[in-house]
Amino acid sequence: MFWPSYAIVVMVLLLALVGACGQVVYLDDAIFTPEVIGTAAVPLSESEEVALLADERTACTIDSYESQVRCVDVEGTVIGAFGRIGEGPGEFARPVYLTRGEEGTVGVVDPELSRFTVFEPTGAYLSDVTLRGRLFDPLPSFGTVVSGLSLDYMAMLGGETSGSLMTRFDVNISSGELVREGGSPRGPWDVECGQAVYGIPDRAEGWVFVACEGHLIFIGDEGNATVLRAPMYVPELPNARDVARYKEELMAFQIGLGLPPPPDIAERLESYRVTPKHYYLSTAHQLVDNNNRYWIATQRDTYEWSYLDVYENAKYVKSVKVRGRLRAFDVVRSTLVVLVYRQVGEDNADGIPGRTLNWYDIGDLRLSR
Image 1 (tube, one colour):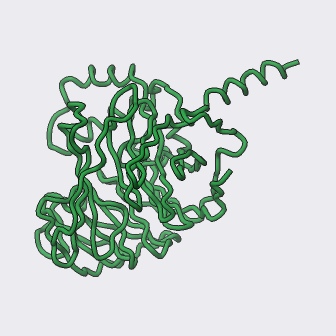
Image 2: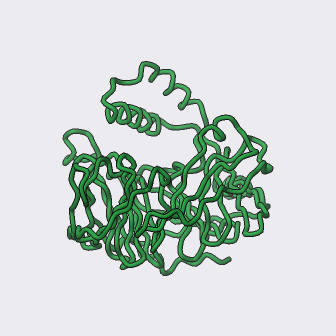
Image 3: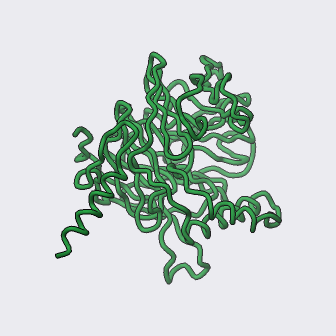
């Protein structure tokens, strides 16, 4: 006798998951939950970068409090812990970003020194190059050239559409020579709630932009745009855990600058509390993998589980469900590595959750319908 109400609920859910392109996400095959194949504890850090190296078994994170990079393998063994405060070779003022080398090396971007340094995962120093202020946020991998993006904050805040929101720089890691500089495609695009917020290039000449209210903008090689609303996006207000986490982030930012708590913290928390959450976890939590598939970490249920939505050819095809509260991720071929916060337990007397790297084998991930 409960079947009719159950059927109505299912139909409502299905209708809620109809994207702007008109496709329905079927609940029985939309979620892929891989098994954890390895795990390793890593130190707390203000940086949430992670680079999975080319061998698929080793991943590196930044320990900002020690100004070090730490690389561990899938068994949890520390392969290398390297770096220290300074301005000499292999030293850092403030390591912030990681990127993986095509030969299994790790690259570290230090914005304060405007320097890009290459290491072996063991910590052996290989080379460095001055970026001359060009590079801010690197793309996930590099070879003889390292590529990075800068955001035009004035264009973003002012809603301008006549200029490029993003600029891509390609720098030769041996000479420091700028071999390419180019702006992202210019809008406007057909997004009713506003313009694009942030974008990344794909592996050809296209781009993907995140926008407001769950919208994504896929720009093809020829400049053709596909605008869709993420099928798995459902507007929802932050819950108590989200608000508490946002407060933690505000406080950590101020503490990191050596400042007291912001005086308007109550107003900022109230504004956050009544504003629907973004579809994306943050603008940094997205990448294009080796197969030119677009991955984006979402705001959906980031406590015991987290979800990564995957798109191929400007279409949503699958969500990957992983354990823990996701803070960063990387994908190399059939391996996914995720940096998560563990839930606070008896071993966290200070109430601060630890961080863990989890490896997943995604070889069984089938994206085509």
